[in-house]
Length: 601
Image 1 (tube, rainbow, N blue to C red):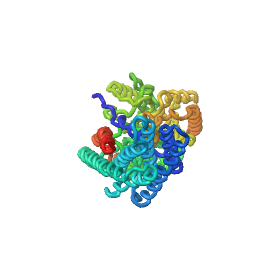
Image 2: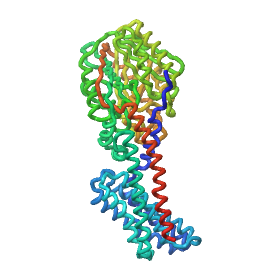
Image 3: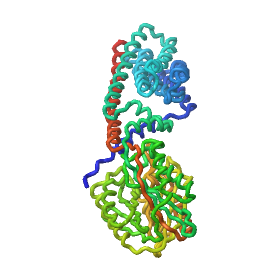
Image 4: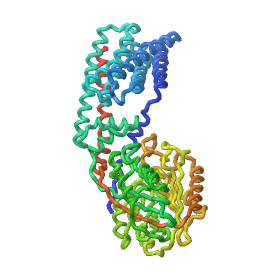
């Protein structure tokens, strides 16, 4: 097996971490911050310039009158009339943008006050230079983020700084000709540079991903800031490819009346990319549908798949849900099962349990870090199922500390351990089985803490005097070492063999700013509480053991997925355009500021 490249997603975590840090507080708080920053910042600037208390008081009054009040009034008018239809620029965000502008202005004034004895011209010249810099920042933000017409964007970039400038004339005594001389060329150059840079980024991006890069970026922001997934999903559909997604269903029915007791659904889609976009929510949709229609416990552990198998939209998700519904109608049956057999090789461990001609296999490298198992492992194992009808293959996805890369040795160990367990289980003696199941929602934990709404599902199987348990927690991977603690708790409850899995739900991903972009199961919660809940759930499942039959079915459906090439192009584009925007932005700020300095002297 060839060396596997590091998943491009690992290179993009820092970008949506940045977006998470840039989210703004409530309207009330951001208003307070604008007034506080303007008053205290300007007060300190005049204090260091005059070294008098009167100077501080005047500065506070100056900040409120010249920066805070004009900014808030201007942003209110902009949000109500000029940017009223823009999804990103409603009142709170407009005022938050003014807060950033005010902070920039205050920094220039403070620097001017601190050096006023060396460089004369305070407060007129620092104020005008601060306006130039603030406008450059503002014009770039509005031109790149707003969906309005160019004329409305230019208007929105000008109104707030011009309002502050007009309010400053009575205080500063700035000559009108001097201000106009500075204002016209610097504003023109700032707008021109922003427009040229963004047009270049748009052109370069369209050559790579064949869609509007700025539109794509705005749709990303809509998801992260407002949880609006539709704009981004429309872009992802443009980038997508058609792929065949497989789903395996293993169903346990009561022998007494053939009603369903538990269902395990193992898909080959990837539950990403993040938040509520695409198939991030698909494990929940499947589990909810199955539980509603069967009145049974359902679990959706992570199948072997990578981010290239992200389903791109909710309409495509519906196709997968419909496939699962179809697979529940009929299947091949068996009334016997083998014991759960475990095999280890190097860093890898596998379990296999046969139900008639169906083999259920779990794979893990825990306690070594693991991420998504490469698809070649699945292909290699499926070649060796001999006379078995079905292989249900689970990527347990249950141990992470840093962003790992699955090495060729890891893949070899996974295939070897999986094949050994599979062969031994396929040839093992089978006997009658009893099944128990339970589900708890873990309401005490949240998505921000890495726990999804489907909580914990447990399926217990008794056969040949062996008690085996499968546990699935709704989350994206698991804190390193927690799996082993859970397995120990299961043994203390009288279980002979167990495996812990996660759904890999990316509903938890992108919600917080962290090294991974999410909290793996166990990282941000009280593990003692989780272990207690798990022991209770195992006990309930064991109490509910009853004679059962297994039924299995599988199928495929064509859906639109992101595809490996599109995913790599997209993530590479994010990195390249981010660097380009950062370098260009320095020029957008520096050139008008340099021109302003020349015109002032």
